[in-house]
Image (tube, rainbow, N blue to C red; front, top):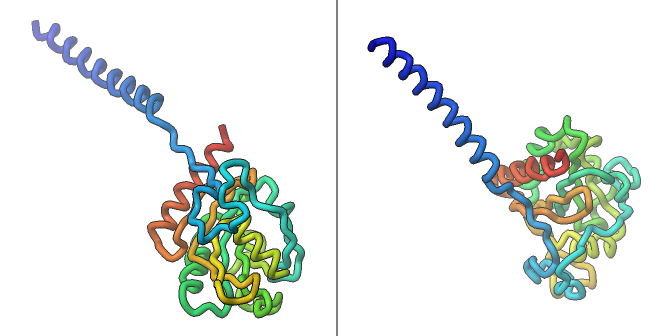
Length: 224
């Protein structure tokens, strides 16, 4: 009798562990996969979007560009081909949110600098002030890794149009010149197809955590 109960106890333990494994596998199979939104102009605050594209609901991508980085090199879409990247808008003399944004971008750089599939791209909104020399000085002060992160300047009209018509992330001054703009705290996650997959407040640590989590989700979508 004692041997019978000993065998039954062993059977119960084995059955329990098999049941746990089966339940876990069912859970993994049935659990909905997280998919990131593909953002379109019609989904974004109209203050950040050029009026000519506010009603676009599909097929929005980042336009081609040609800008100059902190080393005087020409940077185009080719430099980000087949890459996921995080973009933002800033200026080197900004005394308010830029230092926080840059600090958080440096922390992101630290996490992705050994990942060849991810890069960073920061556009100045004051190209008349932020020359190549000024960007280089800023890059050296902040610890920018040139192989990962480009700080770019160039034609103000082109940067304005990228901000308003591509990245959907910058407000107009309203009473200034035709291409005057106010950058926001937005970090923008862009996929390999040049589509916007997320907006994040670059001044908040919890938003940076969310960005890093979404980055992993996006990377995983390319490994399937």
